Length: 96
Image 1 (cartoon, helix red, strand yellow):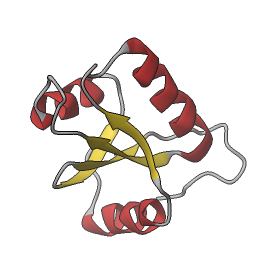
Image 2 (cartoon, rainbow, N blue to C red; image 1 turned 60 degrees about the horizontal axis):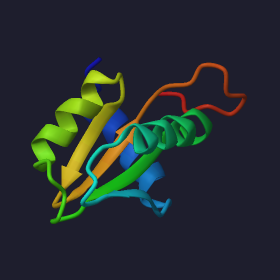
Image 3 (spheres, one colour; image 1 turned 180 degrees about the vertical axis):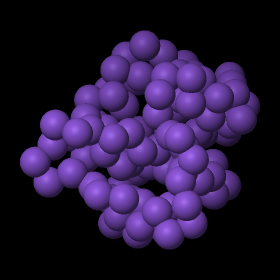
Image 4 (cartoon, rainbow, N blue to C red; image 1 turned 30 degrees about the vertical axis):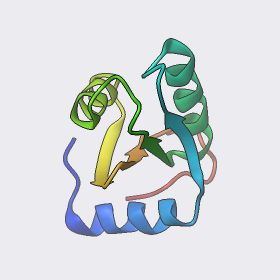
C-alpha cells in the first residue's frame, strides 16, 4: 500500500520520538531479528532500525526483504529505516 505525504509525515513524527529498536549488523537479517521486529511492530506499529556498515546485505536488499515480509518502509535516511505495520487489534492504534 502506498501512503500519501501527509500520512508519511505523521509516521515520521511518531517514529522520531522513539529510539532505534534494532541494529542489523554482521549476522544480517536473521530469523530471530525478523521475529523481534514483528513483535515490536505488533505492539507499537512504527519503529526504526539501523543497518550497520558491517552488515553482509546492502541496505537496498534489507529494504526489499522487509517489504516482502509485509512491513512498509516509510523512509530511509542514511542507514536508518522507518518501518510501519498496521495492527488493527490495537486499542490505541495509529489512524492514518
